[in-house]
Image (cartoon, rainbow, N blue to C red; front, side, top):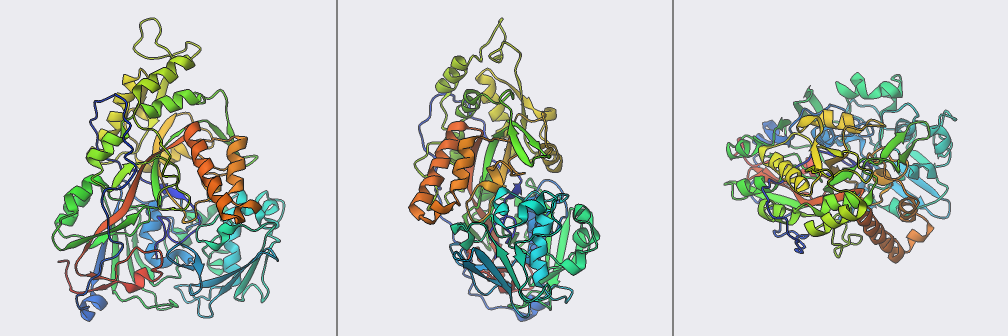
Length: 605
């Protein structure tokens, strides 16, 4: 089952931007909420056609990965930071440990079972007896433990570590390089046994759910990679060229940046793969609609975040011999402001009160200047809508549907800037900063479809209308990998504000995205109140569900007020599915997604 863009692992990761086009000229106040979807989609294709056993066994399922850049090719989910890598390697399962129910609660039946003890403050992970890697190696307790070493090693290239993992005994010392092992992880029946016990200093209710920020949910093939220094693991052959997996399919061919090809994994413990071959090819956002109309692909790679937008929906929703399948996405698009830097010595983000974007009124004004309701009403075609919060509606219990977010209000935007001292001086068309110095704001975006890039232009026009000199970083939209290479530097000044997207974990705690120690907190927004609210999501009070729900809503209100990161849009994750495909379902409870797939004919219909 694909729970999120980064398949079956407990992290948030980076996704490409998929925006609607816009040519909005209005600048009046808009009170339209625009924060609900206007169409309904089915989460599965109820295909009743008879399976063609020959076509299934000998045929090829053809999937598209929609992206405007090559994928990096990092198969290890701990080390990957881009959603595209997780997508193209998803048939292999990536060492995923647990099954879930429809609410993402961890249940028995996966590669391993989980038992939590609040009394003993332990999590016991027990592997199934027939758990093997795709090269025939046994999956061991050490494989489960080694994932924490890769995650937390002081020389790792992983960006998934956050302070929540310090709840594991000995983890903070290991992460700081003061210990060679993690004392709080033990093996009752030995490293080559089936049981791993994690000892915590505190327990959290989030541990019951997949995607929590305390228990990592994939195993690492220790014997296969143990001789590779963790610092060099992401560039190793074991990760880049010849990775091994635990899922129903194994990698047969890899063309880095372009495609992956998969065949059944004979060592898979569960329901056997039915299709002889699966291919996944990168297709640009400008070409994907024509590719489907030409019957080149059966579907896109299933993704919790989604890769198709409103214009695609308009063009493909009535496509003959295809069924639209989707659900509310585990993702959102967002604006973020550069507020400081990451201190690699302390492992903490630091907000700089003198940063260009440190003034809250400036950030709020820039958000009120945009007419997202008009943009998404016109170009979202019901599958994308204005976001009003940093918790998306897929988290029904915690999402604050009453939040207003930032609807267009140019009058308010101008007053915010005037009152804060951002004024036009000496006949200039641009506002200067409160000290009277020239103010240029660099806007970072990724290159995308022509329609999406028209949206970026609209944002620039609205900000120019407000009197702010906002220009593209480097003068134009950036290639995706270059965009993130720039953004993920500990300290950068090339992007003052940028547009990105999060593909989320299926448990909504925020420490890995916006915590003080989170590498993904790329805007470096840190305050005592933010830290307090994030910690309260998983402290002892969080076992009271009403208090935990209130904490999430308080955090949403606080982040909306601060405007350091502002959600831009929510969407459906959806795809057309060709009528020859059987077993296609994106329900969280479908833990056999890849194994369930079959074909009713040799060729795409």
